[in-house]
Structures are given as C-alpha cells and as structure tokens.
Image 1: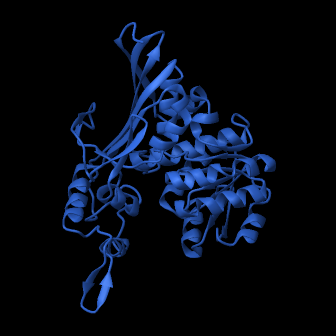
Image 2: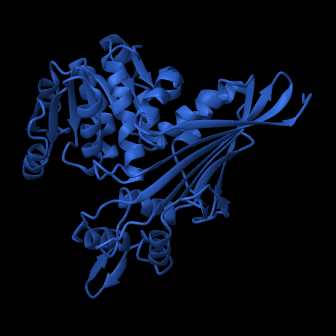
Image 3: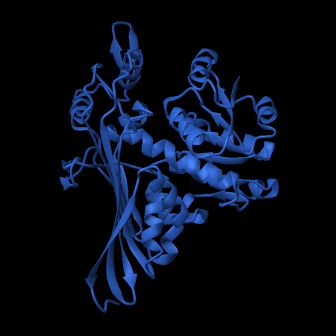
Length: 391
C-alpha cells in the first residue's frame, strides 16, 4: 500500500511513519512537506524503508493533485488550518483521506464535501487523532451497549517525569494550548452550548502513575461532533477536560495570568505586538530536547444512558506510557497511532464507505481496539447500574 503523509517533517508525522513501518506489510511511503531541509532530515531517519520525499504545497492544488496520483491513502498531518484544502486535493486525486482533527467549524465545512467525496469514490475519515479520534471511538464503544445516551464527558490527563534539559517543553501545538488556557470553554448542557471561564476545573483521581490531577474544561471538537452523531439517541450533555503535566501547567497558567498569552495588541515603544504571537515566536527558537521520554497519558470517557429501562454509567479508560524504542512521548503516541491504524484499515478494506465521516460513523470498535492493544494501548470498560427501572 502507498501512503502519502503531508506534514511528514513534523513531530506527529514521525510517530505515524514509525507505526506504518512496523505494523503494515512493506508500506510504500511518500513523505510530503513544504520544508525541503526538514524533509531531507526526516527522510534520512528512515533509511532502509521504502520511502521517498517531495516538496509539497497544499495551496498549490493542481500540483498537489498530480503528486497524489497512485497513492492509496493520504494522511494529513500538517496544520489543521489547511484541512479543507487537503480534503479537496484528496477528492480531486481520488485518494482516500485521513486527518487528525480540526476545530468544529472546519469539520462541518469538510462534512459538507460528503457528496463530492462519494462521487469520487473515496473514504474520507476526519478527526482520527487522540482527541478527537480515540475519544470518539471510546464513546462509541459505550454507546453501542446502551439503548439511549444522555451524557458524554471526556477527560484527558498527562504526567511527565522526563528529566528535561529544556526550560519550557510543550506536549503538543502551543497555539492550541494557548487557546485552551485563555478562551472560555464550551460545553453542551441540556442541548444548549454554554461557556465556562478559562481554566475552570476540579480535582480528579486517576490510577498511578498519573494520580491526582486538575483537568480544566476546554473547547474541543468532539463534544460537538459527538452531539451531532448521537443527539437522536437522546444525548443532551457533553464536555471535554484536559490535565497537562503539572510543571508545564503551572508555567502556562502563569504566562496566561500575566497576559503573555493575550490576544489584544500592546505597545512596546513605537511598535504594537500581540503577546501570544511574541510568546510563540520566542518559544519557537528554544531548542527541543532529545531526552528519553518518560510520560504517561490517560483518556477517560464517561457515558450515561439507559438500557432495558435502567440508568447505566460506562467508564471507558485507556492509558499508555511513552514508546521507549521510538522515543515518542505518551501524549503524542496516542495522537499518531490512531490515524495510522485507521489509514491501514482503509487501505486494506476493513473500513470502506465513500463519503466524509467521523470515526464513530464507520470505524468498527472491536478491530480498532484490537490494533490498539497490539501496541500496548488497552481499552477497558467498567459498567455501573445507577438506577433500576428508570423511565
């Protein structure tokens, strides 16, 4: 199978490539990125694999379509702001498509391309990362056991015990983290969207090695896409919370508190600057450590609903440590493994339905979880009966 990976020089794509090489049978890899030097460096890491590399500009539609001809699956691991253009390229090239999840509005715009994808005969699977992606599949596994569903609450927690050599190590895209720490968080309560102030949360106890953490509510696409998928089954409440590693959380909260993550311009001498742009520019120049990663990450999806007239609560858990051989931290591992699994399922025909879909629409839970378990990422479901004979 031939996989085209856009954003192939990025940090998330590295894990996708490693997973494809280890778990598919002699995959052919086309590494695509706008940065020639970074692309050359990434290709050098995969010497011996069946891999080639080309400079790729997602905004050059015609050339991009030509480059994808003959590929089986296009994995978009580049910036989410280009997901709309990427899907259009996949449709024009008649190449199956997987991405790692964008904001809700972008996802809705992509879903509007369902008819075009169907006419092209391609399967386009959106939001196949960790959250959204893995979280959607965990929710689906619980909901499949219920007659109706009323609430879905998702919590992601991370702890990092790596002996860091760099002063400020962010676990995923810093721009996204800034949003999570500075913008009001959206929830769906009673079928209506409501906002809570930034960094609102409460203490939650996870099993060791994660322990007691303070997840904060943030706006995440799956709380809206899952609502769209399951509101006809009775869904009325959704939320998403995240607890980042404690040391990073304290630093990020401090930067937000003093305004260095702000969006309003401030004057410095004769120049106006946006604080969050300055923060990103400064940190972009920091060296990224090559320390041996020792991180742990958990995803918990709590679902309530009815079965046979009884109120049931499902707690679906998955946790993982860092991948020692790949030296991929746990949080990133959860993000890069699911799109690789789903891309392989599409390429080999285990998932095949033309159109544009979310994971919960067409990806079967059992084989997906079997593949996760093969990578040491087991999913467990604890079912509790809260009230018998409810109506």
